[in-house]
Length: 505
Ligand code: MV4
Image (cartoon, rainbow, N blue to C red; front, side):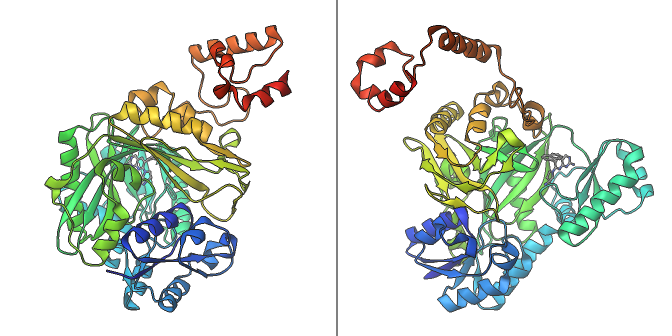
């Protein structure tokens, strides 16, 4: 086993990997940019090395610096986390060629799966269901027209090296072919350095469901159930859960076995995720493979009891998987809310600044993977994800009840966050019913500033608000936390509230 691992990342995921190292008796080595001098991952790591100025292009993305620090510190392996260099085949290659171990898949698998056209071709050959699409890149209106003649509208133009919705255009009418093609291609060129785009039939209101897999270096591949990731906004996931409310045992097995086939076909090793789109008839289609540990991995950890980061490290060190497929038992349900430093009242604009007060929820079934603390200044340079709140319950209902309770306990002041937004989603009938698609937030949430912000209120909510308003205006007295008369008589419960009440009298 490794004695030292360098973590080529920051924030909550660096903290997550450090924790796994600690439990395994491995010394974690942190790196930090000038903007991260006071970040939580440094406080928890044994050693920390500076790697440059705040912009990630000058620090967390500079491959040579990371390899250099790894060697200088005596680390034998590098964990890339997610984002930054996690899915960069050249980085994985450089790490290995310098005699270090990359804690992730082989460079060839990253390269193959990063090329969406090659990935699709590979999966067709492996027998996976895929959405109808062009086998190669398209560049002319004529090619698009003939695809439409065969499969009809709408059509989705996708970037061959894309991800996260960049370089993607929905084509709804023939008149837009030329402009959409041009836009998608130039956006792809700008973001991925290659303007190749291809076509797929556009699925109208799909769900996004993904399968977690683990593959060791000895040819063993297993799947760890699914994650429902349909609650997203602008290609950024917001809430994930496992199991999916619509997946039964039979569908799970079919998707899981497909995912294992996909991994085998790609020569995959380590932890990976096979993404599927699922239509209204519950038919599933291969989308792509994410060749990294994902942000939402904790929900899978909660229902399987496995530590995915430890498994990644063990696989990289050459160990065999500890379980066969039969040994994997899914238990209960887990939900994750991504807490972003963003302002839902202001079109989810990133909100930076000092966290004035900070109190994390805890108690039964609650886990917080956080990269911040009270007094910390959230840097402007990086992803605005500050923590992930994960709850577990014996079933979906209990996981939801615990999430609501935990969101009520969570205190973050000084900056705007998405905590209150999550409270609204967790009260939304469509979310509670489990009947939703990737368009849930777009369809249900109004982000424009104004009186009609947010999710439309139910009649019951309006009635409750009217009652409170009536109470406040007609009695001329504001009661804080004193709606229940019995509380008045209980000094334990009213202790600490008195000051606030006095101020309002
Ligand atoms: C699709 C699709 C519908 N049909 N492909 C989104 C990110 C990228 N990984 C692939 N994505 C999608 N691919 C076909 N053939 C729907 C999505 C999609 C989406 C598309 C437009 C706007 C929002 C979206 C949210 C989630 C998924």
